[in-house]
Length: 114
Length: 115
Image (cartoon, rainbow over all chains, first blue to last red; front, side, top):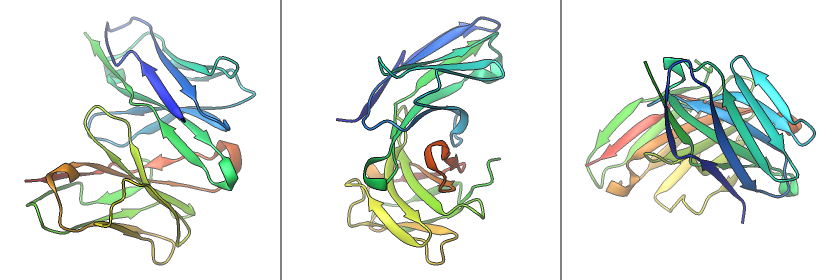
């Protein structure tokens, strides 16, 4: 069964600290993996996208890694800011029979405190 | 602002009423998706269109749900005889068919509350 699992479910850190969010997936065939940031009451916004051959991708203070062998990804946030408080969703896409499927994780809720 | 708009942003309705939501995708995008998201969960796929053709529907999309994209541009999602379990955020996303880097752009969502 295609699944995307994220951990932790929620996380509280102090402003300025770093944190790492995890994503494990069992999706086949694999096409790419995205991390989205979703502010409360808003739609998700794409942070990074990685294909099978890419193992790291940065977007400002956000760095995503991908290990396609172990089917794991992480999102590292450096020097966190209050505005980083949001849900972070890992999405794996699959391309069976010519139709894209997007499998969403349940997200990690991050709270950054002053 | 991703360029995808949804209307209304909020809807409160009584059980048994019909509701209709609209999504305007990024103009050149040929794929359009509808998702439902409940509190603390990730978005759940409902259906998607490529141009005006509805190519896939989730088992979540009961007979009370119908979606259209008549001219391959905007889309509507209608829920008939709403139930309290329909209360959720309904998200629309669009993308341009483009291989392994195809990226979905999400709208702000329509939050539905069924009383």
